[in-house]
Image (cartoon, rainbow, N blue to C red; front, side, top):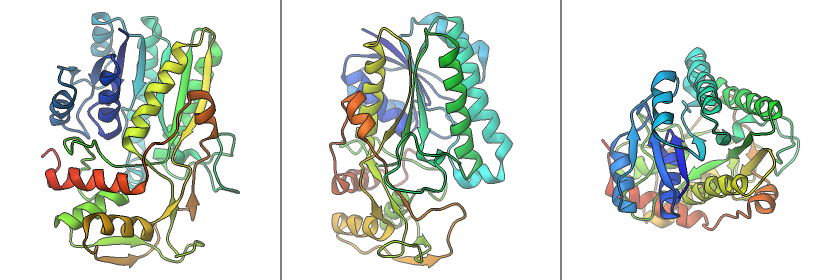
Length: 339
């Protein structure tokens, strides 16, 4: 049985990836400082997989504590989700984001190198792409992140590329994913944002459950059929699968690996289409106001997933209604999230 370290494993994407890994016979160790997640997600994971998960409340920038964990286990690979992720906050607090996101990965890589662990999956983002010249977005398209958050992802991708080129022993895949949506089908594990959500889907479900009065739609004058932004949404369980397949791809390679791969659905949905999908699933109307555009928002962002299909044999299994159904089930069962 292979042992995988999942940093940030108590968070939304990390927790679902842990479930997928354990259900496919991997030993998983979670490291998370709980700055943007809850220890209750660990209990939810354990209830789903029917086994105890080894968990350490540690910040990955703490080299001594991280080294101690590496001494306890013989890790076969690492998946890193640890990082701050709010675009707006990153504009207000750029140093916080550069220190945490980039500093954390550098410390993690140093400890991995010290202990001879060289297989690494990095949680990147479609925010690394610049203003698109065409759709869908391919991994070779130009980059130009519009926020400190996006730039941390892009800088880390460059660091990882340099690390991979420095030695043939490294196997590294950066997964650029688009917009995660959904929840575990049990309704016991899902997205639990702090404060007012930054993302559309949890904003919608919190309005529907009565936590928020109405949704803000940021602009209806984009160059799209209905005037609202179009984004690529992918089910959280499909993203989790992508991380496991990326790890297994590297386990099966004798030579070094240095890849960047998109994970999305390859389909685009406007803000109004997402609202409509949720309204059909919930059988209720979502009140909303049209407000001004947010800085940095582009008209359309859709992934080309050809590379993921070819290299990882990965393909999304779930459509938009399944995403909305699973997320609404989670919100109904957990109106206040894990709190």
